[in-house]
Image 1 (cartoon, one colour):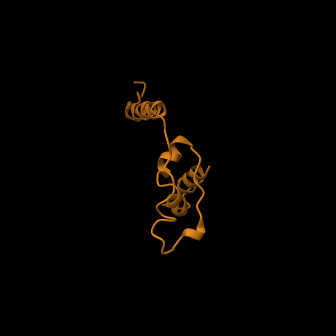
Image 2 (cartoon, helix red, strand yellow):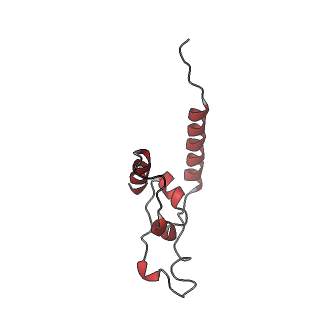
Image 3 (cartoon, one colour):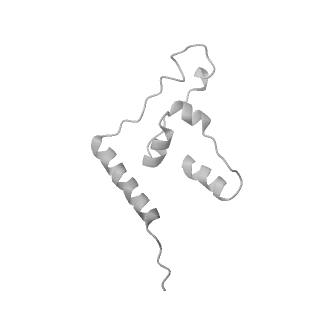
Length: 92
């Protein structure tokens, strides 16, 4: 997945930052889509840098998430926070 490739480049020291510019244009909720491993909208290069104020930058759809899925995400995020916040015992 694209997100994993970006993380790998940073972790291996090849970059300090990875930008997902075109993907952000087509997916205004890109971080949520990465989190859910959801499908990405395809961007349309022909609409980049046009004078039309409606087509291109503002007409890509947001991800629709059901209330049940939203609750599942919140529970998973709470679990991740708890895992990081739990101190590790050193065995002494």
